[in-house]
Image (cartoon, rainbow, N blue to C red; front, side):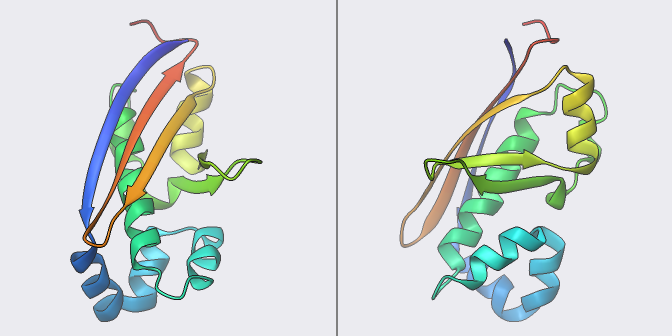
Length: 132
């Protein structure tokens, strides 16, 4: 496996809280998959979890930018899930999934965090068919 890219993002929770208050379901539908929205709906205050997922999507997007055509990847093409042990994981859809297939299958490692004021994520994307 060779590293395709590394991405990082930091999101201000106050900005996400305002977005959710002002744009509500419109923003949720534009940014998150059905499964992500269902998970966020279970949270008493989804702001921190939503912000961490936005940061993760942006970090993965940035890490994929060395792949031809990756600039067109959309928000819902990158889904934040959990693996069998509860760790954050990434599921690709649409264009992102096609780019992964073209690269021989991407391995995406992601780490999320959030505090009372911000959320962050780091992503490392590797592929067997891409050279360093």
